[in-house]
Length: 183
Image 1 (spheres, rainbow, N blue to C red):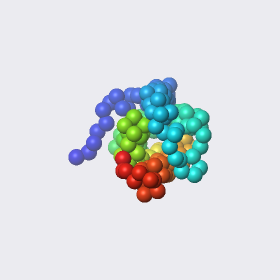
Image 2 (cartoon, one colour):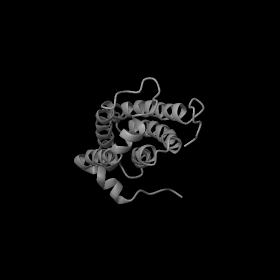
Image 3 (tube, rainbow, N blue to C red):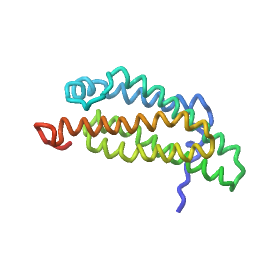
Image 4 (cartoon, rainbow, N blue to C red):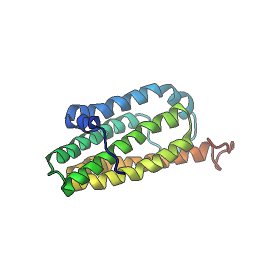
């Protein structure tokens, strides 16, 4: 049975300001809510090599959320202009489904990792999120090649973030830690 997106999930990215603003607003809200956990739980613990300074994260995520949102606008614009029943319409529909799927997983990661302080479930989340975003990038490219420039940095960052997530667990709770307690 095919999955149909609710009309709201088509309407949101039709307006470029909303398409960009929603990921930015929810991303900032998520960061604000978990700020104390970052200071109390994350900062004192061991980090894997290459972990960037804390200031890099809000800068990177602001750019990535804006790029992600703009790509959703380009996808839905291609969907709206495509001939009904065409391959372009079908591919744009799939790309939009992938967009909302990865967005849901993206929104889930911060509460898992920082809110609940559960790096293993967060790693499972990002391990699904990352290839889903690569699939989104591939499908979105087929409907508007400009999306590649918007989503490729996001794919690279997610790959790096997965390394940081896994490395954090390994060093603090996994075999490399003195605790060895799995979260």
